[in-house]
Length: 240
Image (tube, rainbow, N blue to C red; front, top):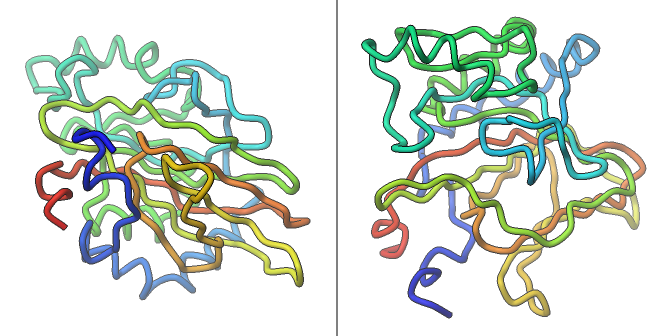
């Protein structure tokens, strides 16, 4: 194991990454009901490895899509938040920087420095408010892996600046359980002996996307998860 990976190639706990996310657990029944009740109104798009962190190309893993909700507006080169002085120029460039995945439903909040998918946040207000209360801003959406599909072994080359790592959270939102079948997550740079987690409702995991991982859905129904990012200091992560 290289020093670069040491202390980062593991699955972290909620308490280690963001204890405020407990409110998602507490409000889960409301969040899941809102999702199911408004499912037909949700906008889904392709968003995969070659798409880029901000979604600049409509390319995805086969069998995988995302319903985007919001993402923090940052300079892609420095990782710093867009300033008020840069705002007008950013507004002009945003459709190119963020790409087609938000479509025409992109709303840019100058006060929060966050870009929202208007339709999805309007039909999922409880979820949106809960994630913002929990301090999530970097990037957030709902991901689906369709029946019989997989996201094969890969790493996510997420943009990192300074000493921060982008830690991804996956939180089971709507996953039907079947006898003898499962949707699962494999994790670890030793692919012969990976760590395995089975996706279930209201269960979660947090990991560094630059570690090898894979998702396999052997269920006969889609797997829906909350998918969100946070920036965490690498020295802190290594100390855990």
